[in-house]
Image (tube, rainbow, N blue to C red; front, side, top):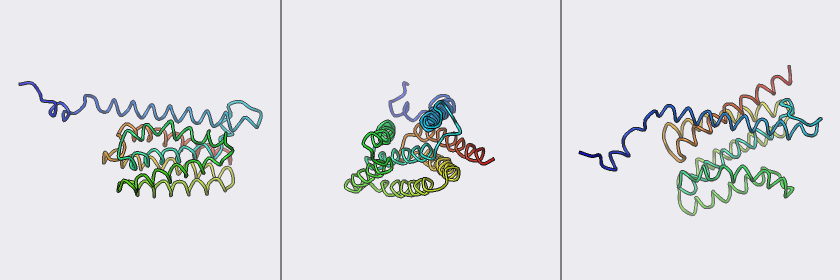
Amino acid sequence: MPETPAQRAARPAPWPWLRTAAWLVLGALSAAGLLAAGALLDGGGAGGGLRLDAVGVSTPATAVGVAALCYLAAAATGRRWAAWAAVPVASALPFLAEVLDVPRWTALVAAGVVLVALGALARRAATWPQALAMAGWSAACVVALQLAPRVGLALAGVALAVHAAWDAVHYRRDVVVHRSLAVWCMGLDVLLGGACVVLAVAAGA
């Protein structure tokens, strides 16, 4: 007897670990790209070129802000795919802020306020945990931006790496965002956050 559509949907996907590993690798590659971009941009004023020792606090701080905003987008709209859709939009906000000569955190927080308002109007309960999470990570990164460069880089790197635990919780519970987004974000958070902490320690050695 042929399978029904419901039975096919309930059947476990083949090689699920391979798909998970692929998203982790893609996240790690994304982190490497962001690290290189940060090194190139932040090092531009100090002789130019790709300089890992020139990576600034803004690189991990912006990454964790964008990640939190993507989760908030999915929670506020009630659509898991909204997190993926928010990745390019949220990533473009800091660059748009630079063009408009507005602090990048102003743009990210403003977008977060809009999403919270949308979630509140739609009475989506999942909005509030994500809003609180974004507020917490934003506060940590704003503090990091006020500290000495090496200390701030380490703090922002730790904040980004810790966000991987948030990803893991959502992956395990299979809530708010697609599991692919959570796994991709884990790979990005751990590699980029960890690299920033290593760079901060190496700079003080």
